Length: 205
Image (cartoon, helix red, strand yellow):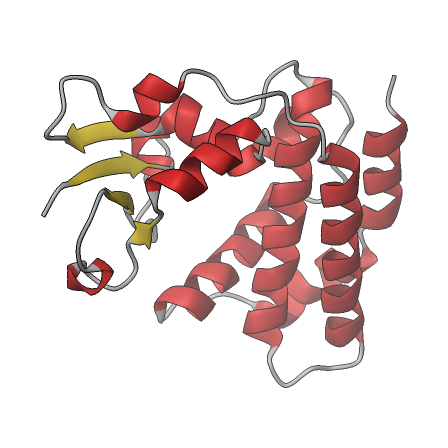
């Protein structure tokens, strides 16, 4: 089968931790998509090209971080596409992620029975908001898990609480058993002025 395989994410950024996984991308040029391991990202060439033409943030993620580890071609497909178009949906993406964050915080405040899950959602929304905002605030997208702390707008959550929410996300999606103080982390996350932080990102000049 003709395909390309890339690695991207924390392993190419040098941010691997004990709970990290390895992000794998397959671009199948033809044939059966079901032959690849579960958990691998599989995108058709046409969809990848559409993302590049529309300036999707994921396209920039691949452009800046994906490393080709197998291709049958002289020039890897991603390299042949060049740079994606400018990322123009930043404010809409941040608004959507802010809604996701607000819903997670509300569930945590109401005493959800799925605290690990909701903390993980809150972490993902916070991280992705920072990644989206980095396009404008840093002049290029930043995909580091530490993105909230790398922006010129101070992030109002202690690193221990943010890391705890990240571990909750890893536990939720990867089935990793991690010993951490959920209630303490949840209290810090819900009491931090995160909505004000998001507004500051959107209004930063």
